[in-house]
Length: 234
Ligand code: UDP
Image (cartoon, rainbow, N blue to C red; front, side, top):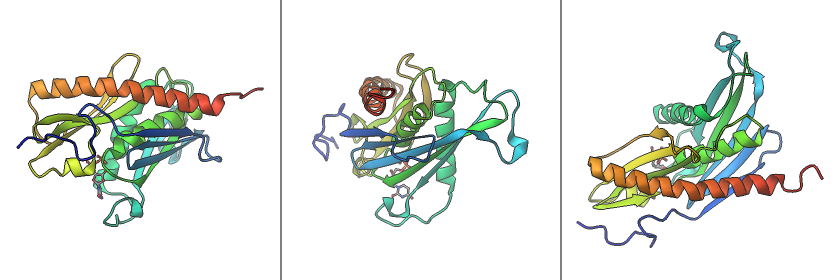
């Protein structure tokens, strides 16, 4: 069956309303909030700091560790506190999405810990988390060669869409979710997962849509960083 009109009235290539704020957790080295529609992620970065357990220390390179979790109240059916297979997977893919932009060569034996928490979940939590984490790392002063911008693309019924909601992910005639993370300057992809089925042509079309969307995410991230540092040093 055709998915003629999106549940929330957006165009198929339109992302949800977004908000970003940097410096929300004062005691962290860096922090940020990223909101995509009803999905709200916060990220706090601590570091560079000593790595424990110490056998993980690497004298020639710093460590980047991500800890993703969802608040119990972030979903309509209470999520049990504590790590799950899903949260461990998202922590690992978040690390590998961010890793290529951070120069860790001068941080031997130390590391950056990135804590991502989801306050409200309506699909796309890993993507909002990556957007928040990239901002928090920049706010922490980690040397970065680019930002990391993330969004989910996919297919709802017969339509290629960007930034799916949970209602769309649960579409009765089937949906495919394909979260990506992109380095906005080079266009390199650092996260690509897929849950569902799409043809090669559809994947190409979805990636094109996603690459356009990440440019608006980048603009918002840059604005959030400028808003915090505007006037700093005066
Ligand atoms: N979700 C939920 N309970 C859970 C995990 C996920 O209700 O324990 C919902 C939540 O809205 C989440 C969505 O399912 O955003 C999709 O989860 P998925 O694992 O696909 O990751 P995400 O799209 O959040 O990155």
